[in-house]
Length: 212
Image (cartoon, rainbow, N blue to C red; front, side):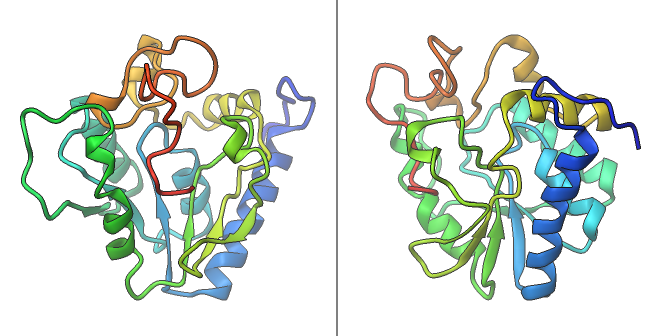
């Protein structure tokens, strides 16, 4: 593997080794009872998990309000890794008059259903993204009592981009159009100032309720 350092000076393979070690631990500690939760903004954590074991389930919360590009990213991930992404859908019917933030309301309940029969989940959360995430641990316990593994929590944005480049990781096409945080279409705009500033623009909301 190439060991070209990224902008932080840490070789990409060292970063990947640390991240995969966290995933290996989760897969060993909770065999068959852990999953990767992905928003399909990119597939960095999916790629790391697939390097550990392609039997690790990948879950996507399909609210019914995602961009077509996001749904296409799901299909590309399935094709590349030869897997079936587990889609969790809401219990409420899709509305045409949904407003920013409203599509987040059922996400925590959808996550609960995704974690039924499971004791741990793996996320792509990173500390640099928001003040709420700054203290995120690589291994935490969430409010449900489930183990939450964030293998790239300590990575910088440069680290993530370097891994994407080296591994040719699948990314959401909207990233190339200037978006930096991609959620449901009603909640997502082009960024205005800083990481995740394109989410819930004009409000003080910074999280959809899955992590905090």
